[in-house]
Image 1 (cartoon, rainbow, N blue to C red):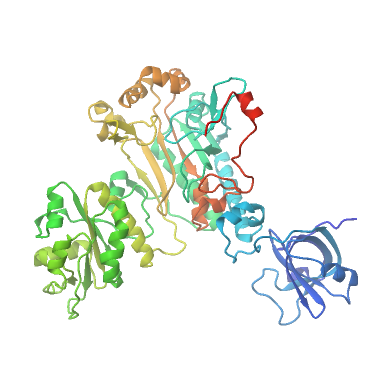
Image 2 (tube, helix red, strand yellow):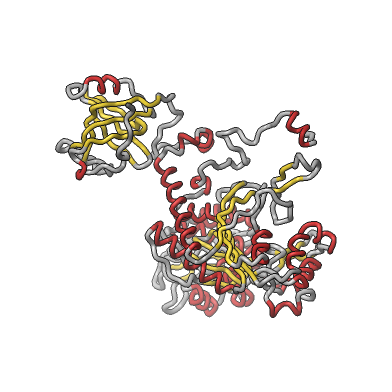
Length: 623
């Protein structure tokens, strides 16, 4: 009779000594010590050392001599203490071992292309091609178990609050939502196509109109877009919608959810209510609508000092309507001239910055002389003139500012600059001049990089924030019209409705994002529930009545039948799990992810199909 598992390979402890047990799993490693064979047997719960001694059971020992890595076996034996001096504190089961009385070989295995070990570095493509082996590695299994734990917490949280879990269709109508749709041809309706859902957005609004005032779904979403570390063609989001609510209801609900997830999965408490920033505050202080709040380095606007200075790069930028902003990289004086003059300016160029101006901060009594140049923001001719020059020490107790650009600022301006930037000895003040978008993007990237370089990001820190009051529209310069910043169903603030048509770019949305450690993990809005307001927004977007009817007819019809005020949010669950586990890519928390070219290397998808299948669909492939 086949052996049947009684315990897992991560379960046995000293308290089990003397107990007869049966373990099943994979041969992780095998060692022959003087005729006695020791095997680490592995399953997803851990590893247990099992012992094959010929003096105890010759048949089991003879069988074990053949076993190789990743063979599947079952062993029956008795738990015993490991001999003195042989305890392995690195293993949870390291105090015990199992003396084998009987063994079954359940399956042989080919030699794997890589070791099933977290410490072995394996090329990404190899891991994805042999995903079934990669998923045997403990780190990959822990990620999937953690993901499952998160989902269980989420479902319980919403069930306790009387949300209805509704599955929305996977075959739906193609609608413009910001990314390309995956299209599915209809065999029974030749020439017509379904679209796989980019999100359940329209359907959850329909559910609100249908009277299901609290909807939730862990939904699969699909978008045919270019990929990166935190994107996949198919991903999982938590989709939530509620009726008769306002923004505060959403904030409270999700604050509570995040608190519950953190406490029940990583054992951490977070402060609620979660901090809130308006979109404008986030842009002014951090240059991005997804700020990383684990560290400081907030931006400082020095437009007034820059405009009054003799440093033409700054003063002319302000005169031309641009910005001069910077931040204090605490402890950043350790950067070398080579890094500040060449490496960083060249790297910043990809974000549009024309250079980097910088000032090192030294103690007031410093007599150290340092020939420095203030980075790529200084025109080359001006750099040459000032190369090797240095500003005299600032008088009084103020810290000494050292840079070629300091001499263009009066002592009073230097003192104000140091005060405003919170300058202390050992700091580095960095500045970028340019148009607002360039300054924001460049300083945001520089802030993140310097925080990493200088070790300013606390390990295992989690910093949440809400970003609110987004602009409803952004300007499409190519088509000379406004585009929706989120989607065309986002409600304007009621107080902005009177000037919706006259000043659309000043209208703020009832939209909000939630951010964790500098990554957007969710976003949503209060929706438009009135047909007249929806039609006004469509007209601003140059969506005529016929086009609106064709694309969104079923929603417009539904809005005419008594739609309640409603709103919701969608959270990217893959991103949340990734961040809580401290990983760099959502591929590590998805069981069967795609490559950056949207390929499934394990199954070979996508792949050509037969001419017969294409003919049934009325499709001819042209490459």
